[in-house]
Length: 179
Image (cartoon, one colour):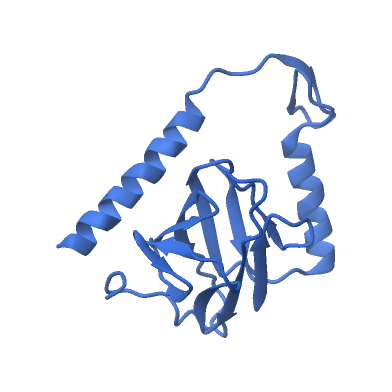
């Protein structure tokens, strides 16, 4: 019963974060891109154009298919969705990390690794830690709808299921959260 309540609260928080982003005041539109997307005041380019360009570049490079996603619903990276697909992903504040997060403490040196090999495992660098479903951890398996706190950013873990029958999605847990 507690797991169900925790999952409901996590989904509720994620929904509230999404609704806050959806209904916040809109910025002034100063121009339109060649494809008809809005360019906001103070911006050189519009994000939609960058996404389209990145999609074209990604299709040419053939990056790995996303296996898991992290949706940030609280913290400096609120509203961002991070897709993880490589066997090993590094998360940290350094620019050489695969996923760069903004920490609450600029002097923070925390770093994390996500290993995707049948299961999704999150590991903290030595001396670092994270919270998973309210408990402090250094290494654990991530499951669908887990609530994760890294560097004062709160995320919901979401599985990304593909159509390819050959892909192994055995890490997706169908029965609930962590014991």
